[in-house]
Length: 135
Figure (cartoon, rainbow, N blue to C red):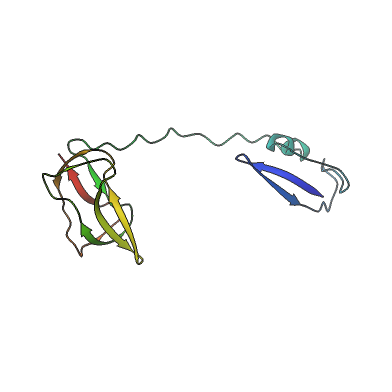
């Protein structure tokens, strides 16, 4: 039997074989299309499942006094493109980190003024480590 299942707005066609037609499961020659998860739960005699909780989106990072940019990945600092006292614009590349032979540009999330760069070229950095502090 073929079923069409939609997950997060994406439809998938799957082929299934019903081995035991008991317990409210339709027989193999039944036609089912466009079933919602609630309909599947009802057909299988299961209690409806609550939708997953929706968390609020994280606030966009700003570059204000006392804030900074942290390493998104562990790696090695390959290049530093900013210096203390320098004004930077949103999206400007601050430094480059290499991880698994891939270069990752670390950019400013918003315009601001660089207070400190506590890392040097060649330093190994951990994920979450402060790379650039802002005034």
